Image 1 (cartoon, rainbow, N blue to C red):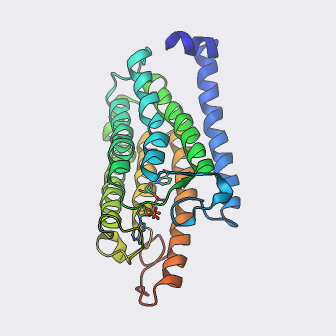
Image 2 (cartoon, rainbow, N blue to C red; image 1 turned 120 degrees about the vertical axis):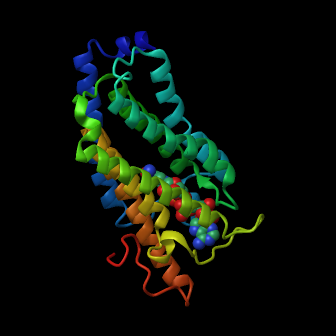
Image 3 (tube, rainbow, N blue to C red; image 1 turned 135 degrees about the vertical axis):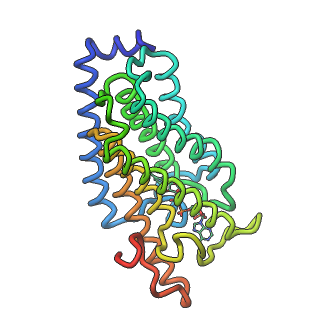
Length: 265
Ligand SMILES: NC(=O)c1ccc[n+]([C@@H]2O[C@H](COP(=O)([O-])OP(=O)(O)OC[C@H]3O[C@@H](n4cnc5c(N)ncnc54)[C@H](OP(=O)(O)O)[C@@H]3O)[C@@H](O)[C@H]2O)c1
């Protein structure tokens, strides 16, 4: 794989330059997505429409679209020189990334209950995003990211790691709550209860946004920041849309519940 990378990039300086440009492009994509989502909901799940292509089975879509976020980084770790993987901060950040994607790609899809099929365009975009982001995060962390020896005791790393873990826990717990609202074979919607759903409609999204914000604080790179911002843009929009949808659909929906940020928003 090193040979393939050296075909693509003539030097390490050029590859790092490209990784930085990929992150800046992701900021731009986040800005464009933000504007688009002022007019349209992210088209999958309850907002799926045939306008965005033929329906792809939800389990298949989640498994296949998320898998590159796991496999591509794994190939980078196994088959490239990965000169920074012996360093503790890099190891811990790579572990955070992998823990998330092992759950998301290999466990989450097979637990889905009655999920709506994903339109092909949403599925294809998610697949491309997972390839792009998987390469950008793990190539940077495994081969370029340099942290001082004391970084794992720095407040940014410590607070970021705690936020990452708390966010991950909230995300997994909230997805578990949602899944258990349906009995096997059911496809309808109910009012979520328990966990952070007592405070916000988008508890799973709050968890994931917190998780990648923590990762960005601990990782302190333009690459991790771009991913955190992109995630926040997509999932905040989804949380707001779900909140409005619940208020319109359920008369008895808890009035004190906010969309994304407890007590505030
Ligand atoms: N990092 C990123 O950029 C990113 C982007 C997208 C998603 N994600 C993550 O992927 C996970 C899934 O995202 P999502 O957008 O699909 O979440 P979602 O809209 O909350 O749906 C999650 C699952 O729960 C079901 N569900 C949702 N609300 C329900 C209710 N009130 N009653 C019964 N079932 C309900 C959905 O079924 P239906 O399919 O039938 O609606 C779906 O199977 C989340 O953890 C999210 O954070 C991450």
